[in-house]
Length: 208
Image: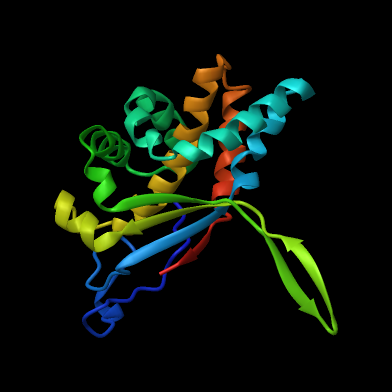
């Protein structure tokens, strides 16, 4: 499994990176990791829908779905099998991480350490020499994983970065799956669909 974040810091103590290792046994942690993902990256797998009108309808419905992001947590338990398939095909995280994600969604524990927001994008004015021009800022989904709260709520003290990475992928997949079920659509070419989503979620912009 690939980890997009390697730098380790700690909010209260000096960095102790020499006692850390890449297997998840950290003496230092990033207190909170935020991820910014373009909405257009999440919808990229929709290109597998060959019918153009249907693809447009799905994309339009997806934008409406962004107003109800927290509902994804309530629906995650319905898609455990698909999450395991995605994990097996693309992510290769420990199987227990899928189970933890689903269980924390079912119990509501996840809301204590994993939050999601939708940045709707705006027209902003930028100065260009003596003139001004308007530029449309794209829509993003911002996912925040608080590692310290995760540890305190779950009791899991190692591998927090693997959980944070996997949860971003799982959330995006459930977001799409719940929309498809609502619209009565089957995943087109599941393996290619999973691969395309995985490729785009990896483009997340991270900050610690």
